[in-house]
Length: 101
Image 1 (cartoon, rainbow, N blue to C red):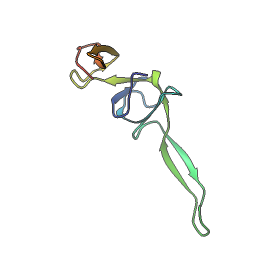
Image 2: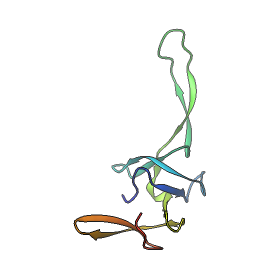
Image 3: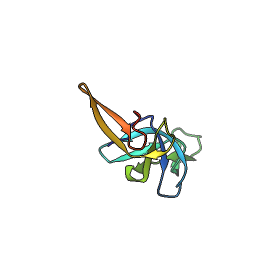
């Protein structure tokens, strides 16, 4: 999975198409990401103690990696990511402007 926590992304498919945000969590085993403030779902929370009320909360839900594209910091465009080696390190780079991501 070429997308990591903290990356700026653009949603290219789904109900939030065209919106951009920041990755809050990456779930590489499921090929999913959670985006801050996007792809929200309502979730009911049961009361924990006696006398407390239950409530409905909006929660950012995981989204498939195929439905998002990383946004390059240099050219500020949605792009695919490539890898090149620099010594023993693998560095991600933008396929459009060749800048490191």
